[in-house]
Structure formats: C-alpha cells, structure tokens
Length: 295
Image (cartoon, rainbow, N blue to C red; front, side, top):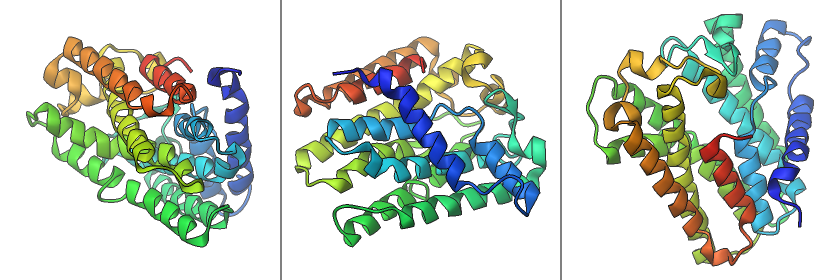
C-alpha cells in the first residue's frame, strides 16, 4: 500500500481544483472583492487541514470523494481566519505565505469583506454537499464545524490570545488558547469522517485525543519556527509575537522546553491511535509532517 505522503500531491490538487471551481471568478463583479477572495485562498497554502481530513478518512476506510467538499470548506474557513488574524486590529502582519497579506494588497475594508464572503461560501458548499448517512448526520457535522470556529473555538482562542499580550500565563492557559485558536479546526478536520460511519465510542475518543495533542503541538511548533527566525518556513514576519509580547510558548518557557513539549505531544498523539491496530499510518504520517514542517 502506498504511503500517504506519496498521495499528497493528488489530494492537494483535488482540493485546489474544488476551491478554484467554487470561488467566484476573479473577474466577476464586485471585482475587487472576488479578486481578494481568490488571492487569499489560491496562494500556495499547504492544505494541512484537508490533508488531515483525508488521512482520517483513510484510517476509517471512508472514500475521500465523500469528504472532499468538507475538506475544501474547512480550507476556506482557515483562509478566512488568516485574513482576520493579519488585520491591524489583530496580529497586524504584512506578509503571509511569502506575499503581502490581503489587507495590504486590497485594503482593510475589502479584506474584511473577503473573509466574510469566504466563511459564507464554506457553509454554502457544506450545505450543498451530499452525505451518505442521513440529513441528521449532515446537520450535526455542519454544526460541529461551525462550533469549531465560534466563541468556544477559533474566535474564542483569538480573543484570549489578544488578551494575553503582556501577561505571564502558565502552560495550561497557553495550551488552552492554542487548542481553541488552532486545534479546534484541526480537530474538526480529523473528526469529519466520523460522521460518515458508525464507530465505537473508543475510536472517536482516540481521534479526539490525537487531534487535541497534535493541534497544540502544531501551534507550539509554529512558535518555535518564529522564535528561531525561519521566515522561509512560515512565510511571514518572525518578529510578530516578540514585538507584541504575546503569550507564545518559547517566549514564556524557552526554546528547549517548547521542543520537549512538542515531542511529548507528538508521542501522545501517536499513542492515542493504538486502537486502530496499525491502520492509522496516514494520520501518523501527517503528524510527523506537522512536527517537521516537511510538506
């Protein structure tokens, strides 16, 4: 059986093609808005969240075509969040993925509207997607994804993150922010395939455990890359957290402790998959990719 890594180019193309087809034509009116939407999404993203969803689908023996509309929709939600994160009232970043952020390229007003439109498009795509099980499962799935970006998820995490500036937080508080701000959307990606099949509570719990550990590890690793000044890897300013005195793991606890915690969380994530008895290699490969940032 081919490794998951060898399928990544094919999976990324499927997602990119779906996104390209669902986004409004950049020449369509209102042109500035549609161009900003296209610019923000089709800009070389690594598609980590869709790939996590496909890896989870492989682990559960779910056809990747069934989850494709949800994978692309979660990428739209991720793109919408990045536009907001970069705004001057949030993280105030001028570069994203090695190019000017959306508000630098198109202005703050258009960037904000583009983010709003991407969020709306994501839910439109999910509402139109077919679900093999039932209408109830479909609604529960969309509700779960909606919750992951709301006040008890990504938006809540961003709020806590903004409030953390110039504060000395403990590890539990920082990891809670990371789980909400970054982990919840990754978790939604990993859990989406569970709505396509009857599963034991133990397997769902295992996937939850995996997603929580890898979600926090993902954000700590981002902080380490930024602290070590690797612009090429993250494609944005490496001084952002330091300049704002944010509650970033390496700033609060040091690089060595941060790296140790990433390794602990990675091992915890992989250990949680033991219930799948060797059928979880796709998720384990994606976990390794997230830790090493080799994609």
